[in-house]
Image (cartoon, each protein chain N blue to C red):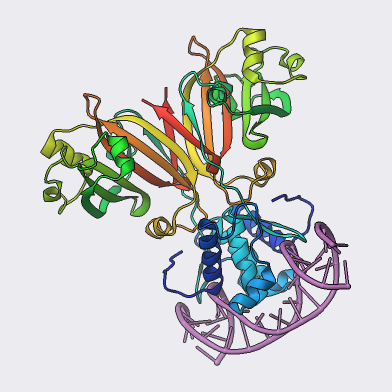
Length: 241
Length: 241
DNA sequence: TAGTGGTCTAGACCACTAC
DNA sequence: TAGTGGTCTAGACCACTAT
């Protein structure tokens, strides 16, 4: 995977040219960059080469090509700083920053705990768990997908409250008097699965911050195991020690 | 950036075929996958299409093409769990896990503190800082690059000890009796810069875990500001609350 | 209808590796 | 020398958008 800076690959040259122009606002946000054919003549190369450059910028999230119209420069999202502490809530964080947020329950199910879930939550094979898939958005734009697993015994008949889902923590608080505390989190950088990329409306190559968390009862017993996938380019996670 | 699963793009079909075969060990680790020409005839497509599929797998880190030889399946690195706490050291973490690690000082300089550095470290415009660029490896494989900034006043004549660099924390301990404590860290997922990708010997599209940290004196005064870029596919960062 | 991006074919020449 | 990957050309046909 070695690369050297002096090799003259035409498509990289064109990609660099485009990125420089976007950076310096020569190609403004939400505006079109030159068409493929224009770039072909400008650089006297084949359309395939231009398309390689275009693909590169698309993958890196700089532009979005729209069939029949052209390639448009993406707005650069300013990363949102999210403070993670033992009692952080998504909603609290957003409220503090005055951001418009929303949660949507994509899917839920009740079933036997899988092996990993048993271990993380301290359950037996026969125990049941709820699995929720939640999409969170900020300013109407998809921001993260979280899979949350909770033991059925802690939130019996949870399905009764899922019809008008607004916030998981409201449900826990209002109907079960539960207030989970963060016990530990594992951070990882990865690329989105095709499914997550679709849901987050992401180009494939935008990295994802993967946060696997265990939340406890105030007593210390595990209550909630969650795996969040957050857009890397929209998110910074701050931890204070 | 919408994608639907039912569109039949030949190059995606080929890429899927290859990934399935790698996953199921039909194409074993460190072995060659079929050559481009073989894939061309197998799928009765043009070489360009096969090369799109190959590029996809390369970017995703599945294979490494070697000129004149073929495309070889990459070994899948098992992620190393790194515990981050207010007194974590890289070397301690690795020692505990019995891993062979090493640090290499790539570059150092002394100069006026930049604006951001002044803010983070509480310095004045006239203050000087040391900037170190450190490459850490595990089992001889590049793992992370860290830029560390320290005020000159805290580590005067640091250059005297950089000739035989082994570990930054050894120098701080042995020559300055300093033991920095982690105050806060900011996590972000991103893609590597071209330079970092080169140094880490990474395909471009392997995501990077970006950890920006502030370390303090035991007294609470800022002592060290660092920006680490860690291979996302080799690293999990655990935080306990 | 003209212009745009989306997909694909059929070649060419080169550099590197193995024999 | 034969086979491999690396780069690039010159087309074709299609679907979508604007007018």
